[in-house]
Length: 103
Image 1 (spheres, one colour):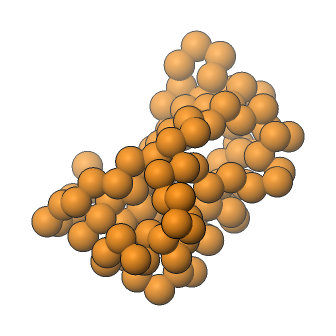
Image 2 (image 1 turned 90 degrees about the vertical axis):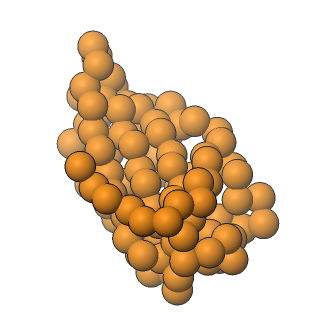
C-alpha cells in the first residue's frame, strides 16, 4: 500500500473556506480514483496560519499516477487554490506501508 502525504497552509481568515475547498477538490478527486483506499485531513493552527495535512492511501503506485500523473512527486493543485492564499508544499511524498492506522 502507498500513503501519499501533502502539506499546505492558509491564513486563519481563510481556514474554514479552504477546508471546504480541500474536501471538494483534493479529497473528492482522490476518492474518485480507482485504487484509492481513503483520505484523511489533519488541521493544525500555528500563529496566524492554518496548516492542512492530507494523507491519501492507495493500492499501488499506478493508482497514485492515475490521480497525480507521471510526475506524481509534485503536488496536485486546483485553480481556486490561490483565492485562499494557499502556500502549498510543491512536493509530496509516497510511503510504502503495510497498514494504515489513524490516530
